[in-house]
Image 1 (cartoon, rainbow, N blue to C red):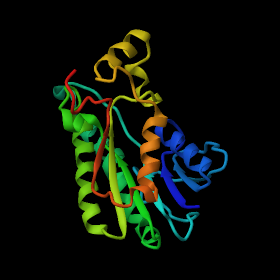
Image 2 (spheres, rainbow, N blue to C red):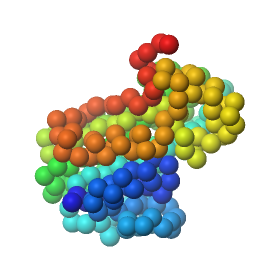
Image 3 (cartoon, one colour):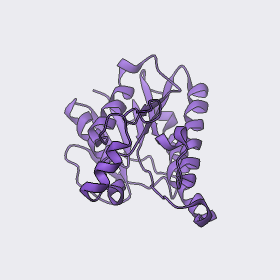
Image 4 (cartoon, rainbow, N blue to C red):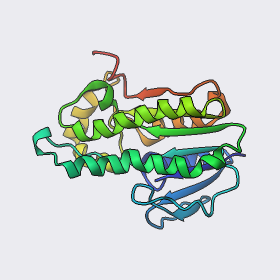
Length: 229
């Protein structure tokens, strides 16, 4: 059994990951902004995107941490304010930075420590109306590679770059059969990702099966970033 911290694990990909890890018999602690009942997991109210997190309530040894909070702020570049960029950087980058700095001493006590962060396919692809989110997630990819280099060989650090996934965060983009069908057809696999798909990759990266992987950004995007269909 391993001890994992999932930040933002109350819905979407994070919730699916919590459920998968618990089903595998692991101990899971959640950091969330609000109290939500997730059976089998320990909940601590923390918001690393807003403040330095409190590590009270965590086990003495952490085998892995996954930072799940994200944003989808799609606007024409001319309509994006500096505050839009700042907000996306706080949620996507600085929250991850604060989390990793806070829990690093606990990760260093593990013999198989792993960190998973989330990017987006929009970093690799270059998509209109994605300037703010792509900028902040591009910074996350840089963070993954830099911290992976600094923390090797003791702690592995990898990232996942999903395309549009069927979560509440993406609801406005797929809230009708027509929108969902159009979004699916933009991917070579002609479908959208489900939270469980992305969570399964995160669970793999946490596990000893990924012991020889670090500094990687794994595309889970239905082939969008590498295949023209």
